[in-house]
Length: 457
Image (tube, rainbow, N blue to C red):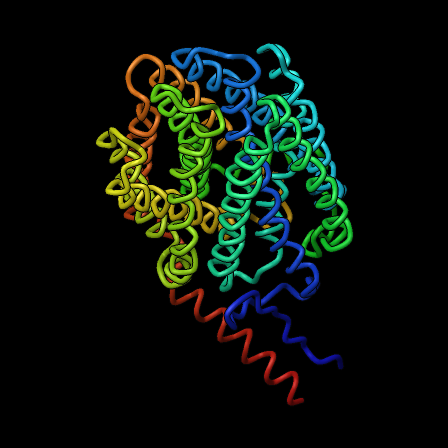
């Protein structure tokens, strides 16, 4: 008789995350890197695009919101079309090849971006980028749910979220603030600054694809004893929405994913347009937006492990209520910010970052708990598609509000959306709360007891 393996890894600070039996520490560490690279590097599109609208296209500030919204709309239209197919493909051929394809496609999009001299050129580059995001971001969500045991899901979500935030901050500071600033000091033209910055990110993405091929687990999850047909997987993704908690997860994704994109796209655009209005250079104006973004993400990073503990100690629907409530406050509070360089508003940027990360983590943990193992790719594909629809709505309406109402209009709008999901989550909690925290604790205790008995035997 083979002894049961005590399978786990410790990411940072001695935290233990128990893994599924067929997942190795190498797989888990590669997931940590994937979390750092995927979300972090793809968000450079926000800083880089805002920079190019000024440097390459010389677009007036009162037109940039609509162009940004239109590009984001196109991005999410592609994601809506491809999220479910990529999820189904992941259940058929495995997560790793789809993930690597996505990273290469994002890199190609970045490589083309700095050559854009027209809005049409931006749409061409954005198409390649969007195809890659559909594959890579979807696989990050699926792999992050495949690897941990149920009772460790909150900690895994938290630490992958920490790596997301580290990647975002690293990209904003190194490829945004430092690189753009240093290239400007070196006397390069604005177009040269954009070219070198975008190509640097593209090269790192290609290297990252190789790392993921080396370190992620190949094949399909061991829970999938027999492969379902493509048609059956498509049906399963939507049919599971009859579960009230999965329906809440889909609704939460609609808002939680748009939260992240609105912070990325509109903080950078807000700072860039505001800075240009104050007479700054394109690089200096871009740094204003990067600062808002970095402050929000830094506080989100600090909060991430705490939110992970909360998720594993409370009902997961309750975690959604908490996250959406915080997010609604953080986004709506941007209405009161009139000068984004004034440090007295950093407390509001902090609440914005904490609320965004809380809503995102809670929605991820809930779908991970509820999605059936053998249909997980399809269910999370629909989850990602719902998030794409939310981004489409938030960026389209947000772009109009940015140009026609106020620079912080997109944030106020998303705050209202978060509040609606907050109310929906309360209804689900009252009528269909799902697994209690005690059940999750019992699963962990049972697992540890079984491992101990097996090893002693």
